[in-house]
Amino acid sequence: MKVPVEKNKEYIVDIIDHGFEGEGIAKIDNFTIFIPNTIKGEKVKIVIVKVLSSHAFGKVLEIISSVSYRIESDCSTYKRCGGCNLRHIQYEKTLKIKQNAIQSLVNKTLKDKVIVQPVLGMENPYHYRNKAQYPIGIDKNGQPVMGVFANRTHEIIPIESCLIQNQKTEKIAKFIFDFIVKNNIAIYNEKTGKGLIRHIMTKIGVKTNEIMCIIVVNGKKFPKENELVIEILNQFSQVKSIVKNINMKNTNVILGQENVNLYGDGYIKDQLGKFIFKISPLSFYQVNPIQAERLYYLGVDMAQITNQDVVFDLYCGIGTISLFMSQYAKKVYGIEIVEEAVKMAKENAELNQVNNVDFIAGDVEKVLDDLLYKKKIIPDIVMVDPPRKGLDRNSVENILHIKPKRLVYISCNPATLVRDLAKLEAWYVVKDIKPVDMFPFTSHVECIAVLCLKETTNPLK
Image (cartoon, rainbow, N blue to C red; front, side, top):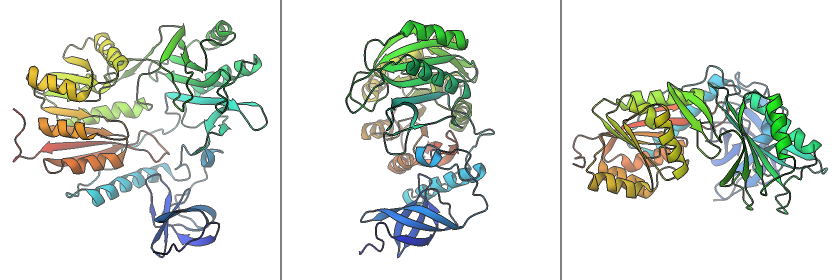
């Protein structure tokens, strides 16, 4: 097939759909073009910026006719940042776009065309993130800069305020950066691998207002550590923990494995539902706890857990979902490969006086082998909340070997969710898919899928 478009050439196109990153889709002679910052129903003038054999990418030059729900973005850097790539669309419409994108995946992939439920949105979709991570660097003029990386680059865009970050922690991060600049503390250069300060990270307990500051350092110490701690504490009484994280590797990974407590116990607390959770620098905790609470209650409700059910939580992290399920289940077993997360999960269970949950550190396959065959424990319900890449082959095989009567799959990536559901369709009926908007104004969306074992399938007994 001859490609019908040329790089750097201008075209007028109609936007006929949305891609999975929220971008508009147009077609020229049935050839697909992805165009950010456009909306289905619009006519636009574009220039082609990249051409591949199967599709191309365009940049909008002029909006010839727009839809009624296009809005002027309230953020001056959103096009360069790429974080909130739907800020040009009314919030309620972004929820419909996400629902339609998931439905399209379902229609293309699953044999049984389950209807995707409407997306559960936020009442106030602003300043919802409880974790911020700011890279520190030197700009083109040789001046220190703190902000966010420009989309698909490592150029740091300075940001005065971010509409999805917590305002209290944003103020603290700026205070720390100003201290670094004022005291001429060396800033890390990722090209040379020299310099000290790499990132400033903040975490906040939204319900408790406890704040953690993490300074990521390319070295064992940095000048005026104690002075910085004193100044932070003098200015911000809600700071309960200040941590120096040591990362001396040439890597894009933000945090190293070694933490040194400069102040406090190295963790903060937050509340989800009736439970208190400890949060450490390295532990995973949902970045939008307001929606996370709603997500977990939905998961428990959709799973129809009873006091006779044994539940396996296969990616339990610090135990958030496991503890939520413990209120309704007979017994919950949380399995997680990250030992520090399991340690914190056990502390969280003890902190909340929960006695019907066991947390086990190790590879899921090996732990399941022990639970199923040595201890003869068979789950009624399995809960999975895997990373973006979805379930690996072994995890799918383990689930199919156990064949629990219900499977609850929480996913931050609809593409891998639907891919995995297709692998389970022969044995399970997909009863519900409910999206939850954990990341307003971005193209990301969380989903809960509930699967029930088909009656003709015999579970492991």
